[in-house]
Length: 147
Image 1: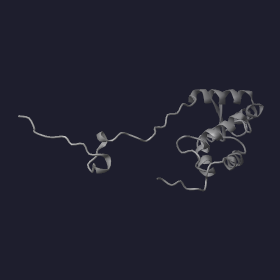
Image 2 (image 1 turned 45 degrees about the vertical axis):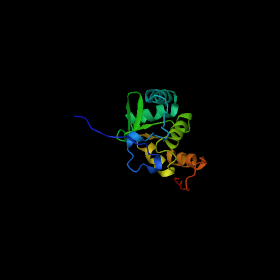
Image 3 (image 1 turned 60 degrees about the horizontal axis):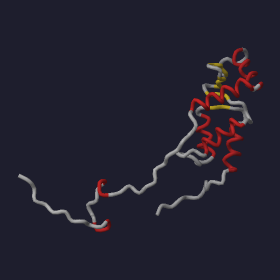
Image 4 (image 1 turned 180 degrees about the vertical axis):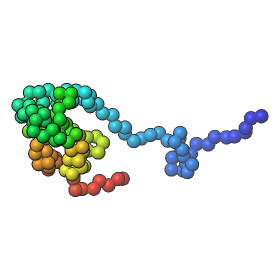
């Protein structure tokens, strides 16, 4: 009640009916370790609490322009985005993380700004992101060819 069959080895180029089980995966896999997101938000909260400029913004949120600025969970929000103190190591870190990301990184000034702007805000953000991206040595204009 069995089957009668023979196995024959065929080298790679001659094996026209290769499948996933007959091929060893040769593509490198990306493995990355990043800082936990919670740690980043703790840094943001600490920067907000220690920045005099941010404290002034928080006061504005409660008095002058309640529609534009809000204060929630020790964070200042501007139009739904978390406000960062401008020209700090935190904004530099954010720009570097968004521009140099393993997935979708080095995508140019406009995409980097769009990604940051979707979550965060700080005064002069557009100018700082543009300057950061222009200093990056990545090949913005060149196209990579696959072999």
